[in-house]
Length: 83
Image (cartoon, rainbow, N blue to C red):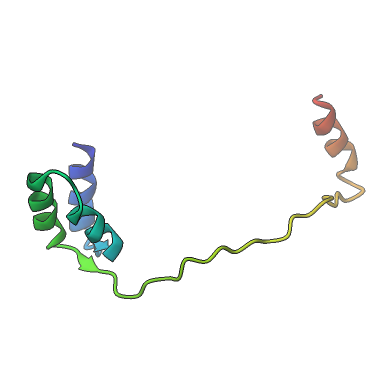
């Protein structure tokens, strides 16, 4: 029921509803034909995303030490000590 309310608001606010091509592929592989028919009917109201991002992993370097300004040092020490 919550999904119905959410999507009603999307429609009311004129938000664009989109679906990813891989989602359509996964639905097509579902074991229940009735589910496939129902979801295909609903997806007909969505826009297909045509630009697909590459599957890439971005790793950012982790900081080993956090800088604490001298003025905040006492507060940081208290927080670290759990007081």
